Amino acid sequence: MSHGNINNITARLNAARRVAIFGGTHGNEMSGVTLVNLWMQNSAEIQRRGVEIQPFITNPKAVEKCVRYVDTDLNRAFTQENLSVTGGDELPYEVQRAQEINRMFGPKGSADAYDVIFDLHNTTSNMGCTLILESSKDAFNLQMMNYIKKAFAPASCLVLLNEHPLLKYSTSRSVAKHPVGLEVGPQPQGVLRSNIFEAMRVILKHALDFIELFNEGMEFPACSVEVFRVLERMDYPRDANGNIIAMVHPNLQDCDWEPLNPGDPMFQTFDGKSIHYQGPSTVYPTFINEAAYYEKQQAFVTTRRENLLASAIRKA
Image 1: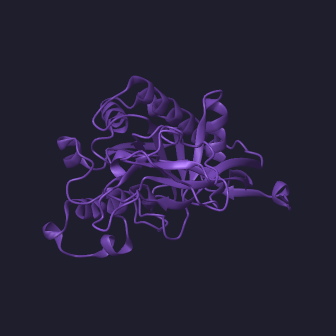
Image 2 (image 1 turned 135 degrees about the horizontal axis):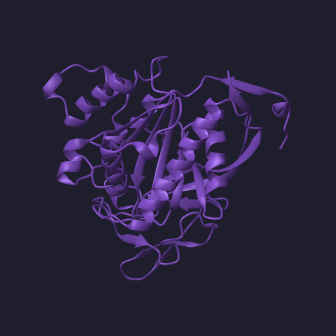
Image 3 (image 1 turned 90 degrees about the vertical axis):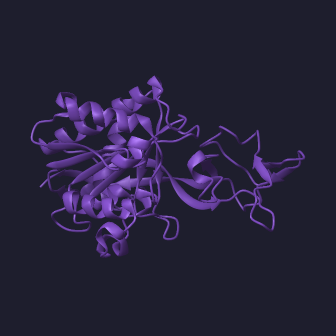
């Protein structure tokens, strides 16, 4: 891979002065709900010099009921259409909420939007700690993720890049200039596991440390960041009526981020037959058998491993 002139150019970026931490975008993902509630009572742990940090419960009705959402998935609701539609109380709850959040932390795509939003999620899949990146061109987020990965070592924190034109979705964090998703699992819905809670807390600490260092003028040299780029959404095999007729194969279950090669088993029918992966090349599946994705007709997503180059950055 050619490095070009990337090593010679330092991107000058504005300081990140306004940061939000979202919990409860999905009301049954308990690590973010619990951490944000904790920090709303006492924010000492998340304070950093020269930064205004706002912990915020995004979907309070879903949190109250301990469900993913009330009317519609808030983490898919931030489309331009939803953000501009009129209808007030007649609109689905999460669409009303998306408009409120956009007013408070956006407007999306504007100069007034918050600099960074961290959106805290849990997965039932065996993904470990995952940072979700929405743009391969976001040097600030790439540098932050590189910093977090190094600070978190020897524990693993992987980066999932979702900028697929058809599979990318309109997240609550997309209101910010630099949106960061944090996905930690495995953890069942409605359950709080101490190891998952602590991992999320530590990753957020490193992220906020990075922002403080950047704001204080530290230069971060050009670096290469390994990412897993979303390729394809794989559904369960179904019959003519749309009913699922096979499960994730035992050889694939819990093997998030491990290579899936052409010919490897990926599903097992109820009578024990294997269905094999027919793709042209090795992929790295993740979100395997995620509970929340049955309704979205998704058994897992496939990804490709890549290295992205991030230019050097410092505060303008």
